[in-house]
Amino acid sequence: MVSFEMAGSVEKTQQIIVSWNETARLMAAFGLGLDYLFMVVYPLTIGLACIWATDILRFHHWPLAALGAWLAWGIFLAALMDAVENVALTFLLVGPVIAPWPQLAHWCATVKFCLIFIGLVYALYGLIVWIVGKLSMPVPGS
Image 1 (cartoon, rainbow, N blue to C red):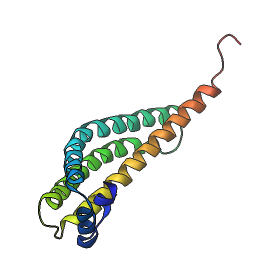
Image 2: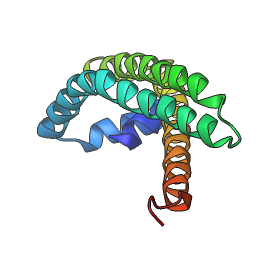
Image 3: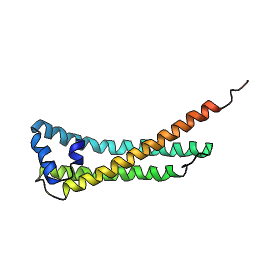
Image 4: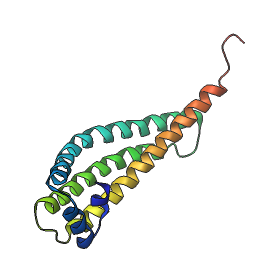
């Protein structure tokens, strides 16, 4: 499915679709529909993780603390890009493979994946700072 999202040209997209049998096309259509459910879950999860990481970074006075709120909104932009990408992919799956749909799907997927990756890395950064903070705290009663 990622190769379909990232094909980026009429030729590559046509090759992918032609290589699929009817079952594979139905599974791709089902996956596109199912993806709309994930568009509710992942922005909330990753966005909240970015906000949590911001709180942790501010508490421990680490750099990039102000970035989390922007990234949380960026994750919602990723979901919007995902929705536009899915519309383009649906047009490609059910209609003729013509421009600009492969290019639109490619650029929306690229933005989506980049924003999700950055958000996840930021959340991981917050988790590491949280762990370091827990490990460096004095143990009560010692």
